[in-house]
Length: 203
Image (tube, rainbow, N blue to C red):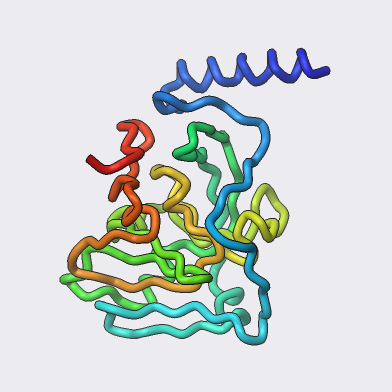
């Protein structure tokens, strides 16, 4: 059984590499490794909220019920972690980032977004990348609610960037005119994080 799984993984990895979907320096995993800073936060739907601030026409403060009432979309995309594993054809279901931005109306000078999460965690993303049709706030993974250790109740998913940009336990966005480092970016990670250009670390 182990040999068969290894053979299957190697074959799938070869297929993805030949299709141009496996970035350099990455390996296919059939599991979903758990990696994050800090503890898994508790979730209380009565107190949870999602805030949008900064350079927007309409600041938002959505309750969990209001967030859940937003239109839901399903996206199938690959996932690449800076620690060198990749997963393919992951099904996410949630709220498109563009759906939230449409309600907040970013100002013309807004070019970047600071993603805000539990425990003070942050990560920066260019607004244009957040507005892609595959970027969403995921509530489900492969048809099931997100596991707590993977970001329940909601995590940002920006599949064309390294997965540290796909922030777990997301709680809001702050729209900015200039780029600024988030948690890992301030600790030596690349400001953008393109897997196909191996933008793992700054400098």
